[in-house]
Length: 137
Image 1: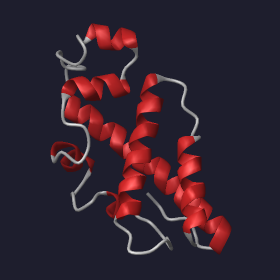
Image 2: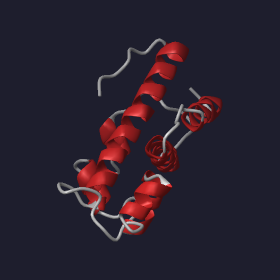
Image 3: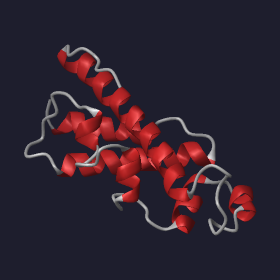
Image 4: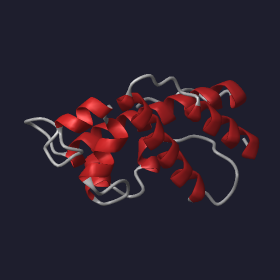
């Protein structure tokens, strides 16, 4: 699998269906996570990919979010994941998103969903192009 496949995967991620603000934000995270992963490769090939490959050394998506591997400001996270009415309701991220989470927690959920999209696309594409079996999440 060479560079063209990487480009194909990037296009699939960019074209992933997203209708809500949340879905669009998750897709943006997926694009960023995959691009970060690609930058860490020593060559243009991908034989298989796991969630650990995407975590950039973090134990899980919560640690990834808390560790500053993605957005760090509540207002930025809110802007990425919320509709204008939700942004207004939370005063653009100044208020907690709900009673059980803060914005870093919400981002961690979105990152986990983004990783699932990447794994699904990459491993389905890999299976189609090279005969590799699909890896479980």
